Amino acid sequence: MNKQEVIEEIKNLEGLTILDKTINFDSEMIPKKEVFNIINQIDEPEKPVLTKEEAEWVDKLTDVYDVPDALYYITRCGYGYGLTFEICGKTYELSLEDGITYGELYKLKERLVNAVLYSYEVDKVKYYEVYQKRTGAQLGVCEHGEDKKWFTDEELEVYGFNNLDEYGVEEVDV
Image (cartoon, rainbow, N blue to C red; front, top):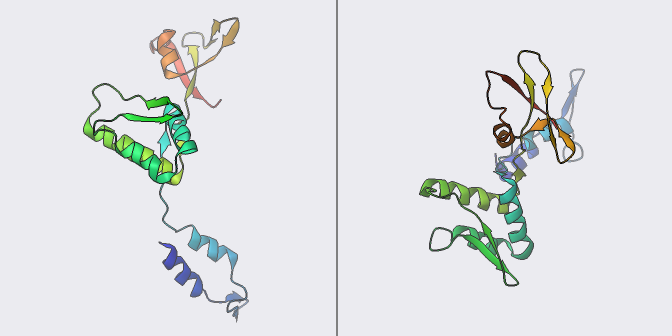
């Protein structure tokens, strides 16, 4: 549903019926619940989900450049340019994976363009709790004098907790 359809739908709202009596409101009052139901049907693009690195790059880009210029720096990528821009002589670059395909680059550029146009959400890093399967004891690591009991995917591998025969892993909200 677009904006014009919403306006027409609201114009066509009828009165409120209470105990089999219809009260016509004309333009004075309309049932708020019905208006919200209509508004919730408006088509709006989903906010893209960016990595932390992508979000920081987009923030720097949009802090300095207006929307058309920001879109230029994103969409020129792949035509002899990377995802780079300069501010006061300093170059900011969003690194691309080696061997990225045209399709993957297109999807990345589309996500970044949508982030500039519609805002974005940052991908939430998942954390996991590790326990020993035989005893059920929670496991942790002491790192730089601090106990660590929640781990990212990468950390599970680094600390050797990815052996699922020996260790159990559960996602936790941090």
